[in-house]
Amino acid sequence: MVALISPWFGSLLPGLFLPTASLPPFSLLTVSLPTVFLPAVSMPASALPSVHLALDLGAVLLLALGLKGLSKVRTARSANGLAAVAIAVAVAGLLLEQGVAGWPWMLLGLLAGGGLGALVAYRVPMTSMPEVVALFNGCGGMASLLVALGAAALPAGLDLLGQLSVLASVLVGGVTFSGSLVAMAKLQEWLATPPWMLRPQRHAVNIGLVLVALAAGAALPLGLLTPAPALVVITVASLLLGIGLTLPIGGADMPVVISLLNSYSGVAAAAAGFVVGSQLLVVAGAMVGAAGLILTQVMCTGMNRSLTSVLFGGALGAAAAPVGEGGSGEDPGYSRITSCSAEECALALEAAERVVFVPGYGLAVAQAQHSLKELARLLESAGIQVAYGIHPVAGRMPGHMNVLLAEADVPYEQLIEMETINPDFPRTDVVIVLGANDVVNPQAKNDPSSPLYGMPVLEVDQARSVFVVKRSLGAGYSGVRNGLFELPQTSMVFGDAKAVLQQLTAELRSLGVGKVAVAAG
Amino acid sequence: MNGPLSEALWVLLLGSLLGFELIGKVPPTLHTPLMSGANAISGITLLAALALIGQAASPGLRLLGAVALGFALFNVVGGFLVTDRMLAMFRRRAG
Image 1 (tube, rainbow over the protein chains, first blue to last red):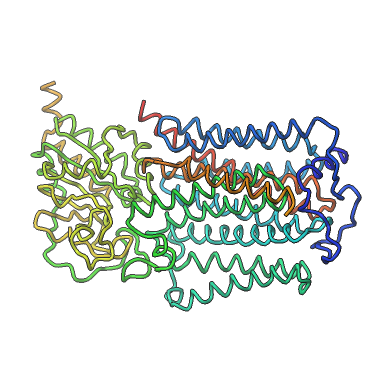
Image 2 (cartoon, rainbow over the protein chains, first blue to last red):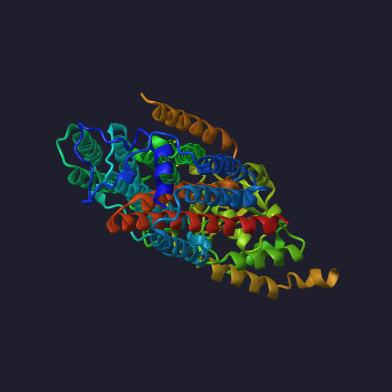
């Protein structure tokens, strides 16, 4: 086994682990220096490295194909499998060459991490998907951080480049970890933005944390600090930085933040690749980092936010703390609100020819997807045309609503994207807005003073009548008031989305909707 | 500097360009699954954790490697499975 480690070590880590005489010994834990850790300069005679290389190249190819395929609906699922296979191939290649020295520890990590991951992946409700992605992402960042710390503690020590890689890996990994956990907590609404976090001084604090981490990093090669305290300082600073960067950002912008942190975790993996001298890690990390950045940009465009305003602008809107859909925050200043009962809404539905549902996160929170599906089916059986208007950022993350409705078996063809459905609103009789708020706010189009101004929205105000199902007049996720509620054609139906939908279905049934169609058909 | 460094920097550059190219036009429907899938890939740092376990001479370092491996595998296994769960729904409704 020892013979297997050495050639791998030699072929992949040259230059990175070369102990430089002028540097202090780089070790966290006191370990004696076995000769096996001295880098072997000559290429090993064994054929294993070339097998390993072939497997690594194959893995990169599969990863690239997987990432490519994930961006198309038709191929996405198999592409995901492809990427998983790629990781397995890479692991096989590494173990083939390195051997399985320390296998009990590997098994331990496999069972604990893999088991928990599988458990979480199968147990989590689809509504909590963004939080879970954030959690997984944070753990990836933590893994890169720990690996870098471990590599620093290897008795062989690190040269200047190795130390810089460790610094980068720890810094980015730490920010990814704590930032992702904060993002998760904010999405779960476990955590709100404390007002002091919004003071402009926070930027100075964050910059200060970066400087502290960099200073500790620089102190290492200069020999001003021994490795252990330096690494502790860098780790703590990076973890605090992740919190400092993420906590002031409002809940509505969290998807963008998660996407960006996802990009960071790729960067952290690439940095870890530099630390251990694995080009596969570097290339995979770089791909994810770049792809994550593009995705972040696409999301920002969808929400009409610039990345800088998301990152440094603080929470959107006047209300700093994000208020959940139907939250307790009573927004004053609404006048001319018309509210109506489910019966009136049912009468309007009965007379309609074309109905569009606009689902939002509130629908998902109320677990009302299935009730919605039932109502839609009833309307269709009466010959009423039904469609769903899906805003690009409906739900808590782009594409989240599609997943939620797909889970409730809503037909794919009825989910219509914003650009396609907007021209159809003028010929729509009834629009029912379910737990959506900001994405139907007409001020985004016509009120330059609104913080939402410029964000593309579903133009439901063009429809003949609009019913907004909402628990209260509380502000939306962004904390901005919604002019749609005051329009003459708008009626508010107050109540829990699921309960209202069930009432509507019952009312329509008692009106004979559906029965007639069955008799006729 | 030396060969391995410049090689690794080339790999970094080309890998980034590849990532930029691969995610060209993504329909909003796929943003969440794509993010989740890419996120699972970033757990590839598990390789580094395995290497650490393989090379560590002390139980302390091996434990550190095992913990890193656990975090990475949590990301990889959970990420791929949850992505698959999401995409399975698209498949069913498209069919």
